[in-house]
Image: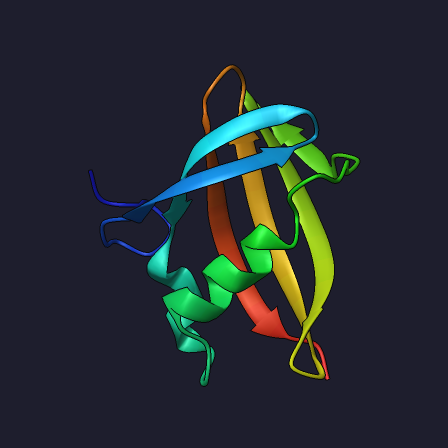
Length: 101
């Protein structure tokens, strides 16, 4: 299914993470982030791994989706990762990712 935000399909990767106490088995990445130069799926996945074992407060909620915005460092660069959980789903969705410096 195409994403209504970016008009393209999400890319799905297997994962073994625990975020907010929830076991995650896959990560879905929306290609919307590609408008920002110098960021790849590998960068996004490396940032997602840094969420594992931690708890985060929701920044907002729409229907059965909880949204989060988290600042994370990687290779001396600061990024903002915008991600979501769908209630009772075993995946973590990445909505956007961009540099913060």
